[in-house]
Image 1 (cartoon, rainbow, N blue to C red):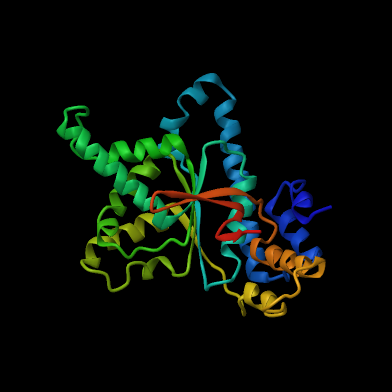
Image 2 (cartoon, helix red, strand yellow):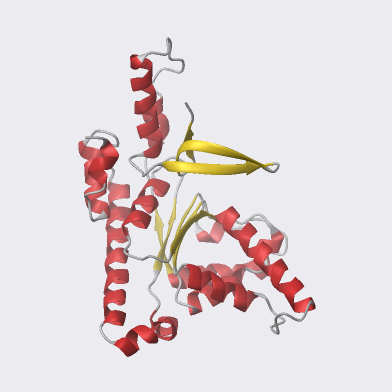
Length: 283
């Protein structure tokens, strides 16, 4: 049985994590286990909330309004590179019992947001919409598409993004969005030394009110530690080489589900036969 086949049967983050440890793909780490427990608690809270909404027809119909008062507090996980943040968040994303969910690199998300803002402004000029401020309708649309948002590599470097984050995320949270994010820096270090940072600072308070902040402290970069044990060059291209590449692939993906993906580069589409997170594999 392939490792990922075994992972499909595990219903909690803890079970998936233990499976990776038992198969020798990762080492058990107390810091990671603390994050695992928090992610499972969050899944339980989200599941309980969905059941409460479904308990009555009216409760379900008015769920979106009630979420503005009863929003589930998400998670903001920060720590150094290679500590396992993305691996754990991806386990959560696959297991959380929500259809309307989205997992995206934060910079890509903000590119999407800025594009939607520009389209709203153009529609306003053409008289197609009435609202002058694009933030509220953009946030509503995003929340309707996905009320669980998982952000990988949460960072802020662009002043255009920094200046709208407070209003954008206030509107997202008001629409019941639950946030789970990974980052290399703590919230108070976001947009560090950025231009007009004083205008960005209110966002940090908003983020901390709506997401539990957890540091993932680990002694080493687990990915590099595992990969360093593998040869740099593998030759000849035979079954033994395939086995080494398979092992390296498992280390990089850590049991995450793989699928075909497509990238558009200068108008041309490149098909990636196997992709998982930021890892890609070509034959």
